[in-house]
Image (cartoon, rainbow, N blue to C red; front, side):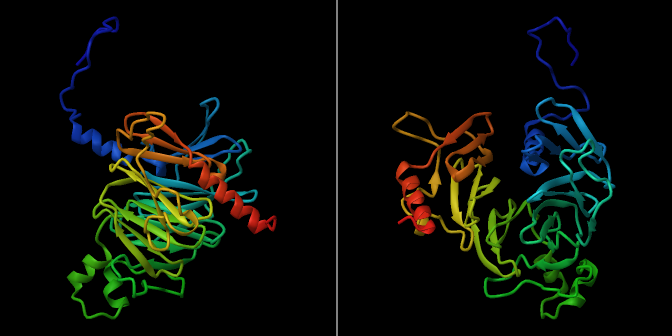
Length: 355
């Protein structure tokens, strides 16, 4: 509806031809997540995607000034990530056109992103939904709506393997060492010897949509699908080592500094710490005495538990504070128990030879 500019009490109403119901808004919000943004902290640049003109944009955080807008993909850019190592930086973008691009970034230049891609990675059978990159491991992992997860090298853009999302923990993923284009739907059945019927193969290899992928510093590749709510962990060689039903829709993921633990948050309104190698709650071993499930409540300070879906998380250096953003706009800042911090400091000193 249209109302006068001076009518402060006027309430906007639904316009004909626009369905702004709750289901539509919920679906749109579900698509809004950390995989659409990346920040280069030193230069204070924000990289964003999913813009209507198929571009990614670079914005100066302090001033809000648009620094650069680049359109290289033939469809909407669905996700992006930054990968840094020493003084080098790469921007990896993925699109609904089924491709992934690797671009070099010079954060302090007038035009930070080199518009000539270093590599264009192909092989997906559907729109790319999520990706992750690791310079230290020389990996780019990307996943699509079709459920396929591909592994490429970051520095040379070479295809490495396709993860088999439906293998048991005793099986190995489909591996290809010839660095050629990965198998597609059409040639998958010819590329793998199996007794399954073709329809069964189609379901096994191209099933549930993957909503998140991550690469741990310890060399584990993690994937998550909100369709079955399962979190999976693979070795760097593509072997499935763990799969857990999270019993909730997860929206944010965060690795610990050492890469041994994955933090997750979603509509269960809890932050859960899990070991990356078996995805069990990480309240044993080096993290003994530290709760693996946190709901944000604190009886001492009379702080209530999380009241909405967890949408984003960030960790301060040395893991001294965990910041949790909720769907209702609230921000929680959590600090580990002092006894845990004391034990951790003691272990670090022992490692350095002071004890």
